[in-house]
Amino acid sequence: MVGPLTNVQRSATHPLGIAIRGVSKAFGRVRALDDITLSVEAGQFVAIIGPSGCGKTTLLKIVAGLLRPDAGRVEIGGVPVTGPGPDRAMVFQDFALLPWASVLRNVTFGLEVRGAPRPVRHAVAQRVIAKVGLAGFEHHYPHQLSGGMQQRVGLARALAVNPQILLMDEPFASVDEQTRRLLQDDLLTLWADERKTVLLVTHSMDEAIYLADQVFVLSPRPGRLFRIIEVDLPRPRSSQTTRASAAFGRLVEDLWGILKEMQ
Amino acid sequence: MGESWALVWGLRGAVVLVVLGVWEWAGRVPVNFAFPTATATARAFAELLGSGALPRAFGISAQAFLLGYGAAVLVGVPFGLLMGLIRPLGRIARVYLDLLITMPMAALVPLVILTMGVRITSSALIVFIFSMPFLATNAYGGVRDVQARLYEMARAFDARWLQILRMVVFPSALPMVLAGMRYGLSRAFIGLVIAELLLAPFGVGRIIVDARSVFAFDRMFAAVLSVILAALLLLSGLQQVEARLLHWRR
Image 1 (cartoon, rainbow over the protein chains, first blue to last red):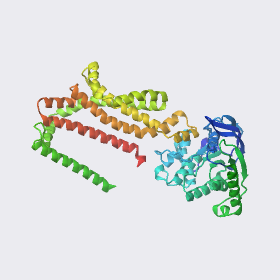
Image 2 (cartoon, rainbow over the protein chains, first blue to last red):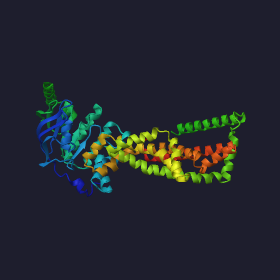
Image 3 (cartoon, one colour):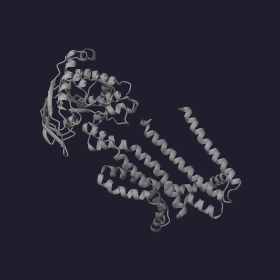
Image 4 (cartoon, rainbow over the protein chains, first blue to last red):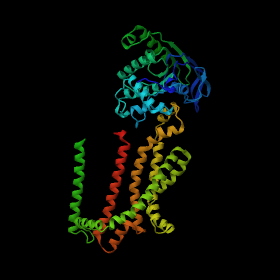
């Protein structure tokens, strides 16, 4: 089924790094981000955490090319970002699925935008839909799916365009705890085979530590880079081994300490 | 599902029977000398059909209707969509649409006839004025209601403007556009009947006016009923189309 994929799919051969240099952003008189500089190595899984209103989603949208920074710039693989591009794909907190379109049509959205012919779209969609565990649901509509399944569609839609960088905006915030843990584990498995750079915005300390190699902690308004936590937990991680380990508990506590210190 | 379907249709049928029963009774009393019985009306209906008078009249009314309503759809929907896409246009045009909707339209009918004369296009124009504002307003609302997060999603996938229109805006606005077409259709019928009764003696309106002038109330009622039936038929046809296009909602 993999067959000859088009160049729209082959674009991502190697992951790309992200460099955020001196990025500031204000909305009217509200300063959302203040002089953020950080870099993410190619192929790393990085989480951004901070209290609500710290501008973490704003930062993600700037990396996505949806918002322009007032100052500073973002570079992807050394190339400055001027807008959305095929090297990045986003997963949204509220899924942002088209309610009138089947799972298949939702997943092929990005491919259709890029002009991939129908047989290619379908072949790619079948593969990513299977990958996120939704095989058999191709012709369902979003409202027929649970929140967790809807977010799997959102993830499949992002994977379908085979980006080098996956941008995730609190992707598991709107699903229940059990589903969230399943989705987190599936995301780790996917990431292990696809080797993409992942930038994940979250407000869950547990999620940040469990998933990421590095956690960037932002301070409240205006968002500044407050601390970087290196998460040296061994991979592959799993709930049974990782969450139960003393190191995991310590890292979550450290993170809690930092967040409390900022209040 | 089958069971509730049977129940709904059974109840609808029962309502029709009760109405017919009461009508027959009221006609036989009679509540008024001008009030025909249901059976007399049915007989008149059959005669109008048999003589070919009703089909011929419908042929004429249908022209005015299709011309007016068709133009209202072709003009109103794209105009409403444009109003939604181009903010200043929407802001300006809204006021006038609201005016057209709230105004007692029947007052416009003499004006149209005075300027256009007594012809089918006058009736068509009245049908148009009656229905177009609803079509445009709904299409406008449909575009305005597109969720911001869907725009953002499409932009994140680097969709171009025309792709956003085709893949996000139009399908998102479709339910409201269709609802507007349905509402516009009933308004178009009102417009047609008013035009034909008040001024332009064509089609079914002509039968109604003529029957009344010779006190043939059963014939008049039969003609009125035929208009109601035609409206119901078209409306349910449109509902079928709607159900097919919006199957994802079920």
